[in-house]
Image 1 (cartoon, rainbow, N blue to C red):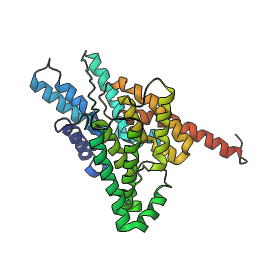
Image 2 (cartoon, rainbow, N blue to C red):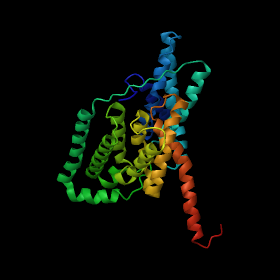
Image 3 (spheres, rainbow, N blue to C red):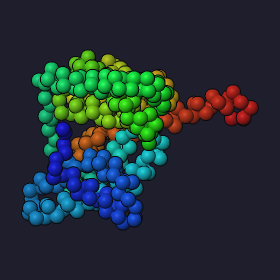
Image 4 (cartoon, rainbow, N blue to C red):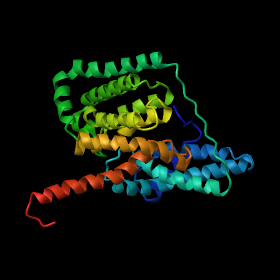
Length: 326
């Protein structure tokens, strides 16, 4: 929907496969890294557009770069996960942001110009909105028809989880409950996007379905709404509008920080969303759009900074109520 195609993703995934083969482990262990790692696919496209080089050289260089990017992603994404302790769901986006920053720095050192452009459709709200709402309505209604009692009991339990990374809702609550959660989150995200005046197009549909996808592993309305509220609050107090393309995307993709709201409460979630709205609008300049998961990069940075601060306050309060000397 926004940046990937059949040509620019495969060498990155092959690099991840090469890494798993090199270490003698199953590719299934790193498959999700390969899928998310295609966030770096614009780098492959950019190399193919260095017209000063002959076509065979561009093909060879882009292929080798993709393999290298895929090979270094698994160890780096493991490291970044421990940095934010699982409180940013788009962990690979943080790793990709770091890599993209280094790659863009190399591009600029060799005087390679990176051109960016904005393609943003505005005329499809009724069509795409109707399709999305209809789809999510089916996902809500069908599980209730088939397994109403089990779904409602499971959903109440699901809402009590923090949503920290590696939470498998399919395993914990069953498929019917997860599809119900997906439908609820997708419906809420679509309605909120329309309510704030956002456009439904390729990038925002991608944002909505990212929320839906992660509804199987960490997101629910209790932990995404405070984050989105924080971003919207930012639009009311800062010098940009929620309907600006970058801000609209931040409104949706900021839910990478949902575990912060799930673990530390509504106020912490609003603060996280508020901070994210500023960080996401500025870190993209560092990597010049070479990381498609820019909000994953921004969310990871916010989590790395905010979570230890919150934990320090909680820890101090706990110690103050005990006999432990500070």
